Length: 252
Image (tube, rainbow, N blue to C red; front, side, top):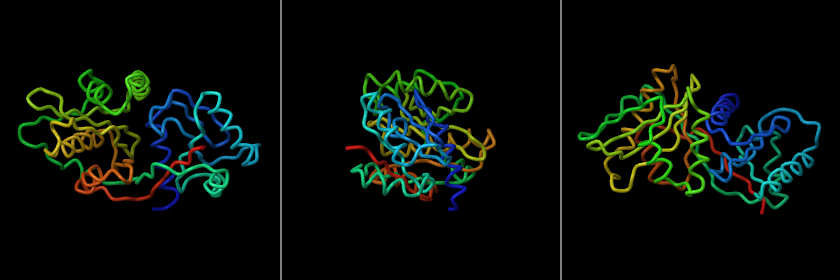
């Protein structure tokens, strides 16, 4: 995959996961989201000049996060600017963590995924309480972070799709789509434990793809931690292929 396409996905993903606070530093964007996900609470080092040297920018980042009681953290992909940033952070003792695979598929292929018998899958433009109960309250967020997550979702109004799979009317699985044609991103995939093993992830992905298709998207991207074997099996089965990777560098 060429650098231009990587940057296009990176820009779409940046816009799809808005932090509570974003501050520009040249082409970099310092994000603070009260600890809600690595993406939301890290620097996105996009291209663009700065009056500061690289060391000066790193120092400014460290001050920004220290003022908020958090360690400085960077999201490092092939689109990171400058290219020597990763090595510079390593030399300062920043640790690597949470390697991520960015995977891509066509909307048409994923839209063909079927919903298992006995379940209903729909994707709507509005955030329902049933969807939020599964994704927010029963998901991976700490209780104190649930309101931060809801606030982030509120910033996506008009470009988000909320996929919900029901079993006999009971919420069972969810996913979030964010459209930025020709791309659409897939986020917040979750199947409740008692419904796992029934291929409801396929149903969520199919519903999201059909929603994205109706909004002019042609390709889907998603970001999955490389050690999340069950999720990666689902995405491989659904036709997603790895395209590039990123990792985080966090201040010790």
